[in-house]
Amino acid sequence: MTPSTRRSLLGLSLLTGLAVAGICWYLFVSRRPAPRDIDKVGGTILVYEIDSGADAPHSSKLEALPSALQKRLDPDGLHSITARLVDKARVEVRIPHLGEHHDEEIEYAKILIGGAGSLEFRVLANKHDDDEAILAAKRYFRNAADSWEEFLKAVRERYPDAGKILGIGPGDLVWLEDLIVNRTRKDRADVRQFLRTKFKPNEQLQELLLRAKAGLPPPAPVGPSGKTFKISLNDGDHRVSYSWIELSRNELDLLRLDDGVTDGVPWKAAENARNQGLAVESSQIAGDRRGGPGWETLFYSRKILNQEARLADEDRSKKFEYFVLTRDPEPGREVTGEHFSKAESSREIEPGWKTNNTTINFRLTPEGSKRLSELTSANRPPDEGNGERCLAVVFRGQVLLAPSIKWTIREAGVIQGRFTDEETNALTLALNSGAPLPVRLKPQPVSEKQVPAAEKP
View 1 (cartoon, rainbow, N blue to C red):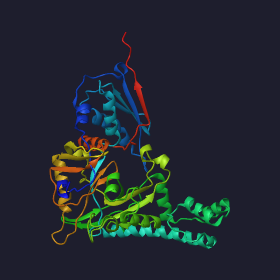
View 2 (cartoon, one colour):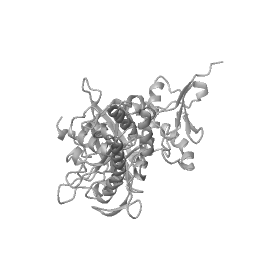
View 3 (cartoon, rainbow, N blue to C red):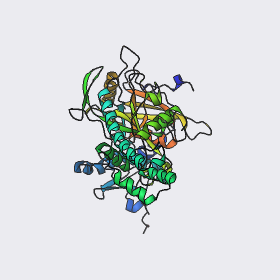
View 4 (cartoon, rainbow, N blue to C red):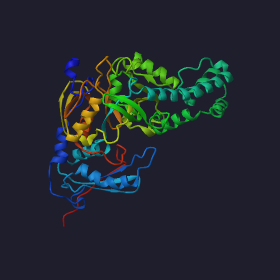
């Protein structure tokens, strides 16, 4: 398939792809059985934990969660699906038996609850428009890296026979301890005590380590006059803030940053920056594919701590996570799942692949069309030069893809790429499922209970 055949109205050019999912929406939402009582017909009870992150959700958002879940799962109220808060940390969803396809529909319900709807468009920060924020982010990481280097200087003075200490990322005392003990044959307890006593990270490094342990992204850059920065786009001046968003598996594959490719230029550039605790410009990783000269964005990567506690079983082999700096959507101008009116997918199956070439056609609501048109018009390529801004499709809190903005996008678009069947189902449902939930839930249920049907008298 040539690059031209992979293009879409979004200007997409991916090497990733998706599989068909239209039938799941038909099965779960479109069929219209009579109302059912779970205590009579049986069914499934799912319990989810609320993912509060660093801040507990406001009580009003918690109170709105059950009705939002019911509307997403059972918009017409014909399946008798109910939801209720168990406490401030959990929500229970009761799904009566839905016929012969019940097990399959429960799996689609999990997609709708745990991830669908959490979709939005963001523009990647770039040096042309967002240089002030990028410089602030670089200074932050440099201050943290300087604190780590000062500590390593003391370690070298204490253990000169340990030789060069290279390739150890900021805060990785376990690896540093092993290196010193293996090279010097010093007593491990003494080495550990010295390292723990001497390591006194500054404010920036301490914050980065705490956020990494909690699985949170790096802190957003802060402007000299507060959180927001002033930038100028095609339609005038804007006040914007920023966030670091994790790259999805698809983006890692495309940029050759997955753990299986450790000998390429992108990996080496990311590894070098990671070991120093610094951010790296996209030109060193992606060449001209993320903006071009003068329009580079900023990446940051780190080693994943406590994988067993943080990652699902299928992701336990993942060693590093990558983030890209993005502009936050301006209030009242967000483009999210609620602004899509319809999405359909088709696939081209390739034998031997776990993923398939897939096309997802979508249409926007009138309000969504207006917002996306304004967003892409303000970020079109300038009349002069060859600079390009990138539009990130953020799904489940990760950048799924980030194509260049070639022109103004209005009421419809196409996403093309290579994804798994599960990813196709989830993304298509996300585009069809409407407004995001008021409170974010952890993607997998903490409890799943089957309720048997009552015995007939």
